[in-house]
Length: 295
Ligand SMILES: C[S@@+](CC[C@H](N)C(=O)[O-])C[C@H]1O[C@@H](n2cnc3c(N)ncnc32)[C@H](O)[C@@H]1O
Image 1 (cartoon, helix red, strand yellow):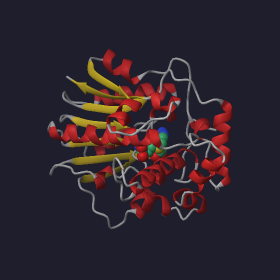
Image 2 (cartoon, protein in one colour):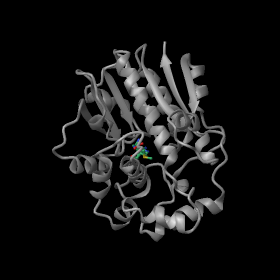
Image 3 (spheres, protein in one colour):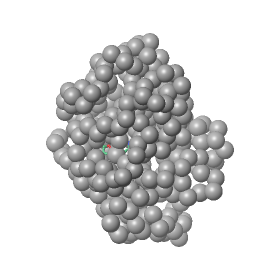
Image 4 (cartoon, helix red, strand yellow):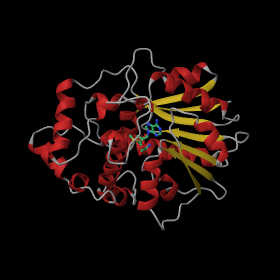
């Protein structure tokens, strides 16, 4: 259950969702036909020292899913398409000359370390203090490929000031990323997030994010099944209970288009298909990925 001012360690509440997606990146990295490689994902997840997450990495969760004939439950395929899309988004932003990057709710995203950034790129990672502290310790000694700055904030509060205080320059165009964040914010905080991004975006700035707005929520049986399977391997995580889903939440495609940004969007399934990866007929794969550019 969420509250207005909740905070978390990496293995708790919303923090654990960052471990979940990092574990999926580790699984993709091990495939012969991997669509991307994240050499830090496994190290980050193992750094928890948590038995449940180690079992997840060792395949216990996936095996159990297969045994129960529920391959779709907690399947990380959607994460693969999302990662590929956002990696390509940053490559395009760099090619277009953007040298300031803000990763909102960075969690255990290792793009600062694993992508090629043009020299002079300044990259800000925002997340809750304990999440960033965990990551810094787990990656101690690893050199980022950009000039990386951590900004420990709560994205429901006044993060723009903290971002500026850490050297962010609102007069130059920025490549923003909000991956796996929007549904963890209440509707009013989501609106403020969009307003703040716009207020800090010089012309030429761009934002990438994803949305499942309008898609039906997972049936209760699927949701409970997933949480129960995770509990079996020792992980306490019911992702769906951490989301906000009020009626009338802003949709990023509509919001940014309505504010004069040029929005292009595609489906998660389309991205995966374009990269030769079959996609199950699962609601999750109907998510929209979008890039908005401020003219
Ligand atoms: C699903 S994870 C995604 C992490 C990362 N973007 C990725 O895709 O690997 C959600 C992340 O959002 C962060 N987050 C959610 N709400 C937040 C808030 N109000 N303030 C700061 N960080 C927040 C969590 O700490 C967590 O790292």
